[in-house]
Image (cartoon, rainbow, N blue to C red; front, side, top):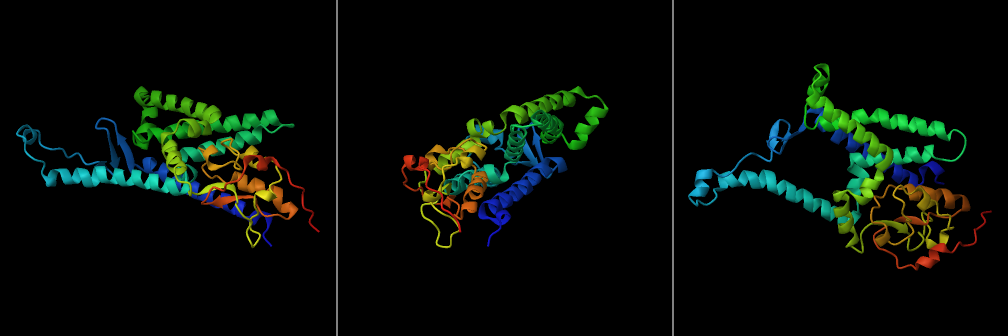
Length: 311
């Protein structure tokens, strides 16, 4: 028998969170280790000490004479600059078209911080004694984490040792941007969080539009049919508790069709909540992942079936 801590929803949520943390640590390590920098003067990235894309341009005198482009000059730009970007964009669109906002849910560092902030503020705002103390602790965490976020962002443009040296020498050219980023990080962490993902993020919007154009893309919602092995139930098993909607960090109702869940990044919170409601009743989870949007009537979602008694 599957224990409550080893159900599908909890396994999925745990594994996704591990993947999200590992990929975020990878991205954070790049600027802190100096492997990834931004050269503002030349508007280029510096990867492992080398500029990208390569600074290769056609000779000005050859262009003036109307000479055709030589492949030994143009090829490095195309192969090392244009082609990798094109492949990356196509990969993001294709992946999103099949699986939705997987970058947001698995490899976005901002998404990890925003999700963590949402979870902490939900915990802090629960009614009951100690609410003020919980909120104070969460705000203390946000304010304490803001300088670390600012330091990481600034490390993209200045080597970490350069940022530290700037504080020792009182270099306002570094201290002022650091202070601005710290205040901005605290404001975003305290008030914005996942609202940015839902309403502002362009990368998320591209993924969403790619996903919504595919009727057979992966989505979280009612399972069209119950599984023979009882691993999941169907829409008929829904008790109408609305917990899946209450725990959604974006604020969607996972029971609705895909077209209403524009910013779903498949965090798994709704799966856990559905299991917690239905497993004590001896039912399989009503929600799940599937590659086909079921054609169910929305009014049926509001019908609360008679609970089944488990002997």
